[in-house]
Length: 229
Length: 229
DNA sequence: CAGGCGCTTGACGGTTTCTTTATGTTTTTC
DNA sequence: GAAAAACATAAAGAAACCGTCAAGCGCCTG
Image (cartoon, rainbow over all chains, first blue to last red; front, side):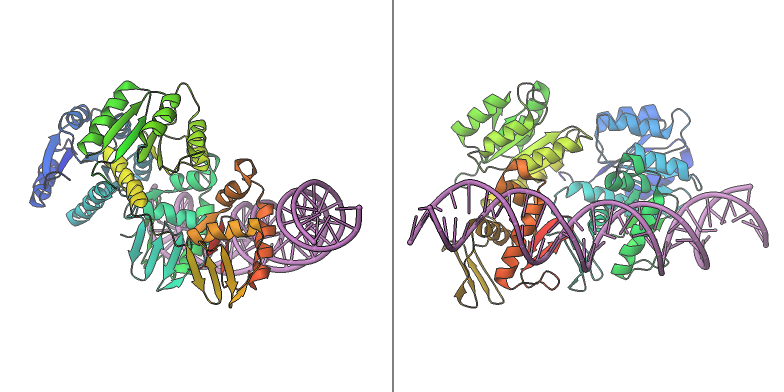
């Protein structure tokens, strides 16, 4: 990145949340641009060219999805969505509309910061080289099409590998059920979530991962899966 | 590279995209050669000998694949394809025709640059494609065009040798059925996986290799073959 | 021109992978 | 706290894929 300070666009109508987030973000060295409505947000995104947008889904003037879609018409900047608890539907639709990740609102600021870092990093090193995932004993090497667990190659099937590939390419971020199903089985299968469950189960077994205490693949209930970063 | 400036051929019909890309590329220190049509592009590729080509798939005068194929008849320069979103089919066919990478069009310029760097680097550092393979008792010497098993010459047919050559040059990585079929039999045969099975079977017999417990050639089910590294 | 060689093609059995069903568990919702 | 929804896993059946053998055909060579 050219300057040391990444600019973050914050689209949030409630004043106290806005100021809380601004302070937190600035404390972490980001420059913050504030918007109080969807329209404002879209305008500022064009003017200021921020590196990331944080968007509250519950805006008064516009539907969150609509903001995402309009932003996505001309921009690829990462969008982090804030949703209220129990709004599974909203999250999923936001992600499908083109958001990159979400945080459930009454949430720790540290989680939010972690997500911000992941999104900024992913953008920055857009290099198709960061396609080697490594964590704990697991190594997934996309160029070589190879999966190693503690040095041993793990035999994975085609579909298992395809899933891993998707997970690695968005490591740290959520993959919705829909998007995975669409990629692996085609657009007609986006509601056959049980295919996915069986696939993930098999994969976890091969990787020695436990869904209740995951080292690699985390279940995001009602939304999808995430590969730990 | 001989001079510091790599020359990039940009084949793009839409004027505003073209100038945007030219500016971005030049800002990163590349020399840009512009072409507005497929025919132009092919001609300039021959005249100017660029180090890389960026090709928009949606040209008015010629099918993108056709451009790639005609370029590939005599040139090995890396081709980066620009495709519109959701044109999976186009991407795949472009890659099969011989493109090296693709970027989905409304995409960040930083991602494009990253891919450009990767393609140029791979070319430049000659990607030390091995030419002599040695493992267990097997020695495959491409410059000498020789296959030895425990010191004994193994008589291999032309097609068998061609396959070995491909395997050696990407030892450790997977060769897809498609790519092998395209290289050995031509683009029209990319679905005749049966040819390959027979060929590999014969080769394994000559090398004393067992598909169930392979010392050299590993089957990647549904994908292709891999020469152990 | 006969024989050998290499390639193509078809057949078949065995294996792997994928789908589907069933059952129990965890998490969310009311 | 109970019902409902979502998830995990095992296992069986179906489909896809793979390896091998062998016959047929054309081409080259001796």
